[in-house]
Image (cartoon, rainbow, N blue to C red; front, side, top):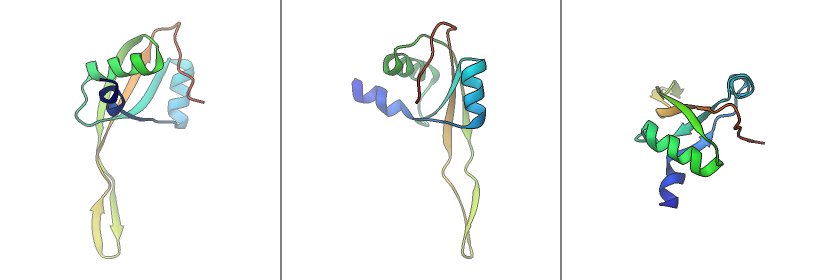
Length: 94
């Protein structure tokens, strides 16, 4: 069960926009498994970080086109989750 929770959340996304959202809106961005649903993401965040999740928004991110010599390929597709916490909770990423 514990391994299952850690396979849902791949990594937190630390960007300029994400830092602003975490301070102003209590919303944190994570890269999650492509097959994970909102209920699994919510449960994993609550267990790993010991916080109360208010809302989860997800988006599938399309891979970007890249050129390697003469061959065009794309980077991998990935799933992004924005997790909004209750006002009295927060996550310390650093």
